[in-house]
Image 1 (tube, each protein chain N blue to C red):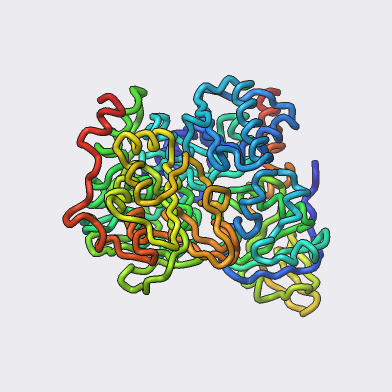
Image 2: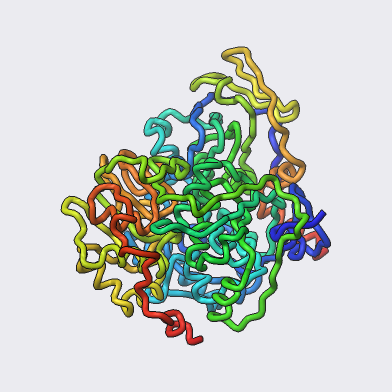
Length: 440
Length: 173
């Protein structure tokens, strides 16, 4: 019997020939990512136990992201604790406000994520980084404390759910629609404890940006991780950002899967997940035009440059509807700068959108667009739980950046296919933008 | 070393709905602190505003499927523990919540049908040795999934950090 990528990665990092699902292994960690909400409690735990040094500062990346720029005095205290701790530990990979970003978008963008790594972070959307062929999973603060002290962590080897994406995306349909359709099919606990592994004929045609959106939401199906093989597209993405060597793991042809699913990507329509679960996805053609008080484009799910390009291509020359507010939050400072250079920020501003600096912000009801009672928001984020973006009496709808942009113009839930430039996917960016940014 | 109690008795607080998420257990607007007593003042706030006023030390929280799904915030475990909850019994748990609970030495027990077996206010007993949930008010009982040996080891050590440190000390010795 062969092994899946996840099993191979965990076997490799725990010094074993092979592992099987259900086994508990103690695995070494290649990258630990720290932000200001869950790290200070971990640091406090270690100090209390008299542990004053992290195992290896070079394997740690730190950025404040949730409530930055500081939303209140207490958040400022957390960010300050994070800053002082990283200085005292001599952690060099630090991204201060001004260079910061939502950690799951920032870490791969800045070349810190390499295929074959094991990655943890005190945040459930750590699964995002599995799109580069890593085992990446979210943990709590106690796990984080143990990881920072020892560079190791125990894991139950997960079973793997295999999902094959077949065909290519139709006009107006994006990777967000793929993952919303998967979660709607299997439910918010459909992949509980499992690694969600992707493959199929449709995968090579998806950009890294599009892939991150899919692995980002593994947790929304209860998954332990989302993982994709590091193919040509992934390897090129990494090589453009770092010269560090990496290792490729691939699932064996006879690997065992707990279940297998096939998604006909070419048959999808734009999807909207209705309040208040990510699994409440509906094809947009089934929906009535519900009025939206706010549209939010951003987050670790959909705040990357490709997302902003798509939204801008729809918003260009249009205005946000009266009675609707549109908020655009680039996921990282680098995305913000690129959007500036490509003229996207001007398009958003002219359309009447607010553009913020990178932050998790209102995605989790923090700041920069919190909802009041009775308000509705169509959001490109990952969770539409009760109270997620503010009042428990507000309602959140999840969709792609294209659907969000169309909805901003219409003021009601709208089909992006009615607003997109006439044919094919919009390519607003001048060819070679990434070349210019990454110097390849 | 703290011992795992073999029997726990307390009043039930039942939330039978599936997928109660960590945003409901402790909303993100309170994540600018991590002091347990302070978090406890907001436990379950977005699903039941009256919970904090009613809960007493030693009480038992009973839930449906996939309890604690969503964010990885350990603040959810701290808020419940701080509010006095001794154990959470659910049909099933999201993996990060379960992991955070055990890592804290906080009991999280999976019991099929737990939410149907109890109503809020019932007098419940959890017998860890026999793997039984007893409802003394109704005179009913249900079997639950015994904790794995690994989870028991962590609980017996008082949580992940003491467990890891003890192992380390052994290696050094």
